[in-house]
Image (tube, rainbow, N blue to C red; front, side):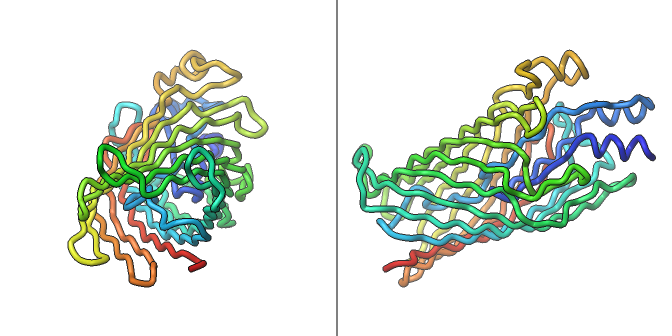
Length: 332
């Protein structure tokens, strides 16, 4: 019992609601060590969160310069946990979450490279729970505050690409480790790591009713605070195919994909966990897809509701994600 508790604590599993990303990573090696009665003295770092399915419909569009407020509420239900071979690990605890995320965006009239300069700030709150374990349950930090994210952006609206309407945005964000984090807990709202991630977002409209939107992220992580462990660079994208069926009403097929490009490293070595603990693959991967519906009111209030089922997960949980997004232009 003490060994199991020690292993769970050593993994320092975290969740940060900033972009509603749950990364509950228990590798198959830890379970094999437990069965064999061996001691485990370290674990590779987990990925901090990123935007996986938070924003999809009309993501590249912005009505124009001004202040915008966005509210996201998302519920995540973990169904199982997959190892590095994509196989289900039985009796693994399932971490579920309810996220409330506030975002403030300002798009100025100042021009740069033909687009409008702006900035954004995101503050998340998250409620976590654990179910499904036959052993010792991991402890959860009750403080709901996640990491603040802030960044600069350039918005290009109402452009043309191959004769089709095209709006796009380039943004550079910084993840600041301001969220709640204590070593005494196995799961924390704060990631305890600095990260920087540029991303490019667009919405392409071939016809009046049909649109395609994508958001591409590339995330670089610094060392975990107080350690030499560092997650590998990740690439992920959100996508949606949207069709307007009535004035203000749009249906979508939407989802996301995450792929960790590089192995986790320690003290600069990307082979450390392979050589020291024989963890052949520390990379994470997941794909999700599902339906959604959006409504744009005559007053400019935008509401989106969607549900996405995850599949093809590696080294992470696999579950279902329901998201409600509300956006409103504060100044008219």
